[in-house]
Amino acid sequence: MVHGKSEQECEQTLTAIAEATGITDRHALYSTQEFKKVRVKYFTDEETRWEEMNA
Image 1 (tube, one colour):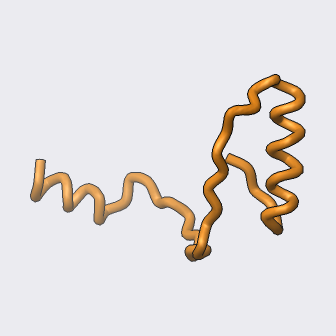
Image 2 (image 1 turned 90 degrees about the vertical axis):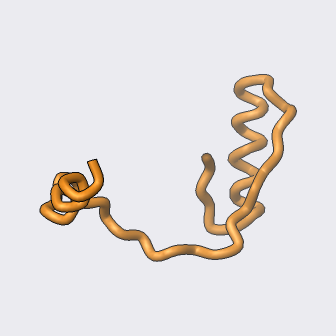
C-alpha cells in the first residue's frame, strides 16, 4: 500500500520501489472516495454483549 497526496506522487513512490526491488509487474488501484477514519475500539461492552447473544 502506498499513500500520497496525488496520483503522481504515488506513481513516483511505486517507481522507486520497482527500481529498488526489480519488481516491475504491478497494477495500481486508486481510491475514489475517502472515508472517515475512526479509531478501532477493542474489548468493549458492546462486543461482549454481542458475543453473549451470538456465540
